Length: 118
Image (cartoon, rainbow, N blue to C red; front, side, top):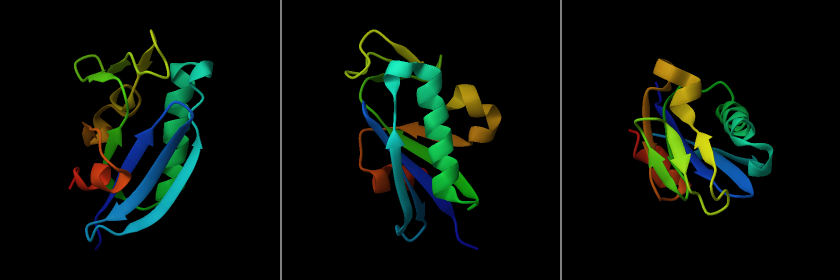
């Protein structure tokens, strides 16, 4: 059975996701607006909708995400992203909790973000 991971690129105008397998093949790649002007909860909702759409039912094991700003794992908040100055955006663990599995934040391409989780 194949193993899958999701790579996410969160930016100021869009969020992009890809589904990769253990052979480093990108199986799906999608994007949508990130909409930070509508608040952190909307950004998070857009991420999860995009992940579900990109995975299309594939049983992914992990999510890797790259984004500007500083991510503090202790409180699961993204601080000071250039496209949302002064905002604090709650991220993945706040929404998924223990079901999130391994989560990583890095400044890499989509494929690398997914691969770092294997």
